[in-house]
Length: 154
Image 1 (cartoon, rainbow, N blue to C red):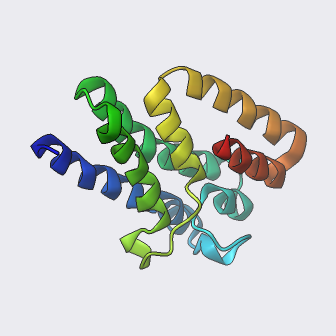
Image 2 (image 1 turned 180 degrees about the vertical axis):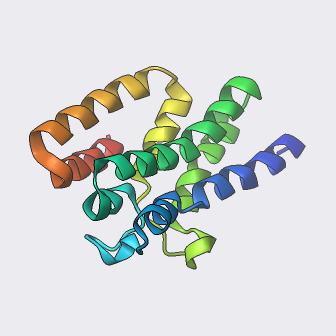
């Protein structure tokens, strides 16, 4: 482990720990989205509470907090091997155990998708966008949430 790793690991964790969906819900909807749906601070509950437009912003921010630190570390700073694996896990851990919510974060589905895109560049957005579009069109809010969570396990 070197100085670069010691600098970027906390950055990746801190990026993941930002509860953007909760903040978007509080700012635009004036409510705590954890009181809706499954009580998680995620984009699905923003969708349930406020509709597609606000949910798209929350989803994008949760996605980017995984994609940006991992993509920058991998393609700009040369992270590879176990250093990259460790760094890629930290935004998920930050989201799931965010200090902003006393360790009670969400499921990190959008953040995991962002990490996938940060590692693969174009494959992730292409497949993820098609999946999200089809699921939203065919199944509605609850269906895409389930399928997106399942795709994160693949």
